[in-house]
Length: 350
Image 1: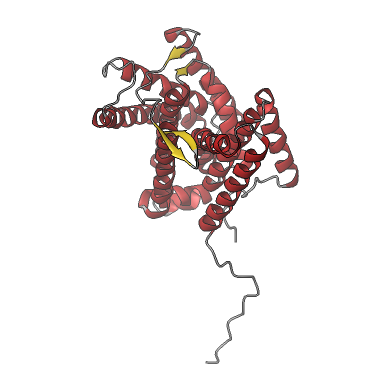
Image 2: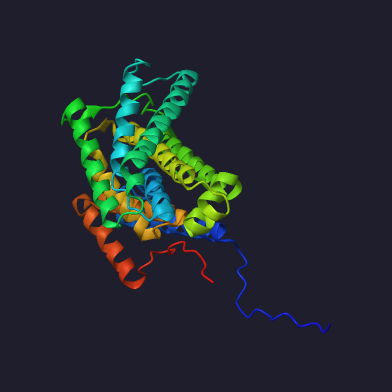
């Protein structure tokens, strides 16, 4: 039997994995952002460093919500417009859990007590918002799984209004003060700037949740089931994947991340309201599209990009133009790269 020489690939080899290249590019981008603000804002480098952490905090919240959008779209190709309102419900759950059973209203300076309160609030809120998202999928979306694609889309908008109106009836229309258990006077000097410990906490915890999600999807059996379902639902089902379980798990994880983002929203801004989910959901959806809908890494990148764009607008005194600038950037990206910055994660077809 004669041997056949294997063809030699002429494609350039990538020396660094995608995640490492993104980390390096992000570091360069943050450094450039810091240097730019150091020149154009009052206060120089000190103010610039504070604004960098403000942008990272905003980006963390948007990225966590955007992950829910992109996960659901990647599995069943549905834009879950109710996801922003799940985020809003999560913020209210955290508010009433802290103010009710835990009886908290002000800052907690005891580190152990503060850690205990946070360790109770995060699991409870994330579990309830995850179950809420699973319930929405079971009773609103699953019956329409084989319906024309417009039907579940309209249903998602309807669920969004239902959640928003229920919360409005229960809590009213005004702002509700969120218990500020994290002492705002806790600050750290970084490069001459006084940075809030809360901002660092939000960024680090959000980053840990994002890394944990990536590891779960890439290294576990259920994660492999999610990836195979996103590529080809029929083939995954033939290979023994339980589609209902996998889709429910996707909604569970997305809802849990939205709940964590709701806690961060309350801690950082100090208030929540019934229509909070509309703006946050719209920006998170924009982040998912900007990075590449269906692409988890793209959702993270898009969320942080929107956080930095909004923060830059506020830093230069043009906060009222922030949303307009965000959508201008989105339009430009989609004109020249319709699939988003990193592109959609599509299945390889034979």
